[in-house]
Amino acid sequence: MKIYRKRYIPNEIIDISGDKVESVSEDLLITSWLPIHPRNDVAFGMSYTYLKKGWKISKFYDKDKNFLYWYCDIIDAQIKDEEYILVDLLVDIKVYPDGRYEILDEEELDEALNKGLITKEQKEEALNKLNALLEIIKKGAFPPRECI
Image (cartoon, rainbow, N blue to C red):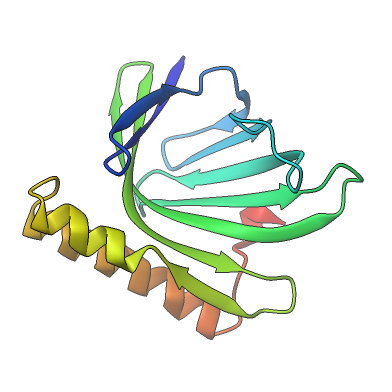
């Protein structure tokens, strides 16, 4: 199985096949991982990639195994055979343990559209997926049960 993370800003494709696959189904890919680049704040994490919904919900932990926050990437999952390309649709949500959240990188979404890196349809798709996840957060139904 090969797993790649594709980003528009910066323009890169990173092979994350070294992440440990904990579980995979038609709808959900669960992985555990170490940061791609060493960090002082985050030591490791777990990601729950909802392949059809377009959410990669990650739990971030520090070196003492303390939960820090949830980081939710809005993605487009492109799957062919045993190859998963997780295309980052730029806009993200960070959810803190107390339930507060912040939307991140909205300006990157606009920048990508203005530079022709994404289409209007991709921007709409990203915003629709973002809003669907925001509804769950606002209803107090976050994190999804699979992530607990």
